[in-house]
Length: 105
Image: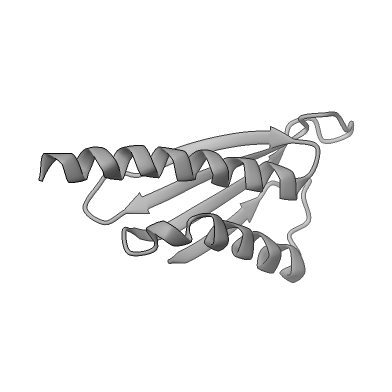
């Protein structure tokens, strides 16, 4: 599973941050590794100058083999929490999506 991370110009994307987020995503979606080709993580700061309870937004876009991409998003006060929340939502979405696909076969 290939993980790509992109940030807006207000979030500094360091190598340590990228490694931590990649581990979070891989761990959260490990069960679906056989079905996922690529995961794109998009991070943005909703209001750059100010901080708030749901200031950081993370959008996960997952590319499934032979299917259209699916996406989820979550917001929190930190990049890590937002990414973990989006990964949790993605896990539930993939369970539903792949479950429906296996029922058709």
